[in-house]
Length: 101
Image 1: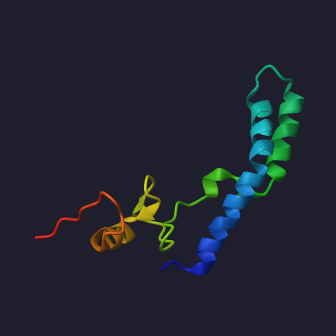
Image 2: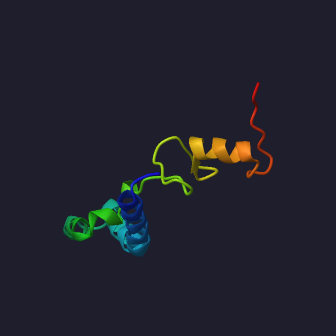
Image 3: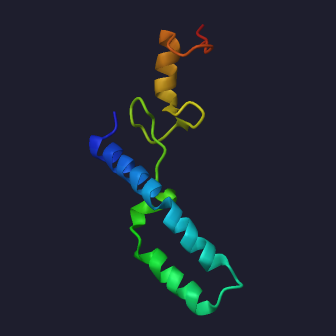
């Protein structure tokens, strides 16, 4: 199991990213629009810098839903390789057959 604090921190970042998503996108559109005057783009860049760092989607870490493990993560299943192997062996994942010899 991962540390509870790390899992909670990641959940907090996910909530924050969702909350500020529209505001960040609007500011980024202004910054990347070359038609707008430089002053407006600079002001938008300053406003973007004032937003909390944890509201950026790049700070979100993919974690296993079962264990919270950050590595060996399968995006399609949203779980780590270890949890996938255990649940596959127990027959809890439909259609998955774990080979053993």
